[in-house]
Image (cartoon, rainbow, N blue to C red; front, side, top):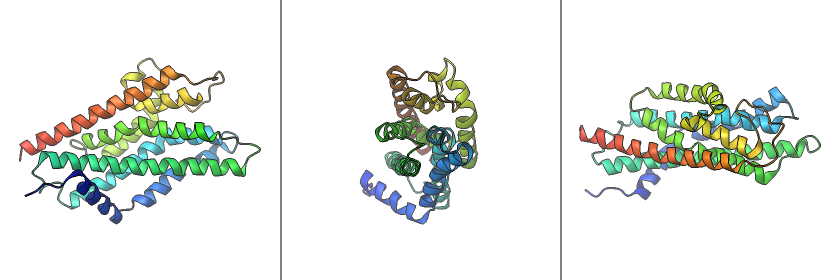
Length: 249
């Protein structure tokens, strides 16, 4: 029997998403960041506060909820029981990660649109440099890619709901503390915090640095490079796990 190629698998996974609440999650979770920032901080600190809440909670929470929705749907369909080929299973995981990343990419531009709209409404009080803002939001997306692979990998041992809770708590409470130490490079949850600090001087605790003048290219490169290496590592580990699972069948 001929195995499906990656394009067919991707199309199949995309069709499955039509039966989920992915788009309601996309809009509700993404827009929660600017709404919360506006309610707590008002207009004057709306921009940095929106970025802070997106990096601290809602980016990884959205990724986690997309993952949780997918896992629940997969379990109801048999949880790969009919998949004998390790290569096909790897491709299915790759398609899932790619689709989740694509959804987060869409969320990034929804976030940009929300910030820009508020900036237009309050032009006298709020200034948003469009290009810098786009770079920051996309840098957050890239430095969070590893986490999509990681939570799928972690779900081999832990309940999916527990994975989402732990993942969100690590990002919100532990990562900002580690990000302010010299050990931040050893903890991937800090990378998206540090890339924002490098680009706009917003510290991991949500406070704008008064001394920020120029982009810290060293920190930027270290953050992005480490995040991409982490993505490669966890994608390899996820593939390895597929090998182990199929060898036991």
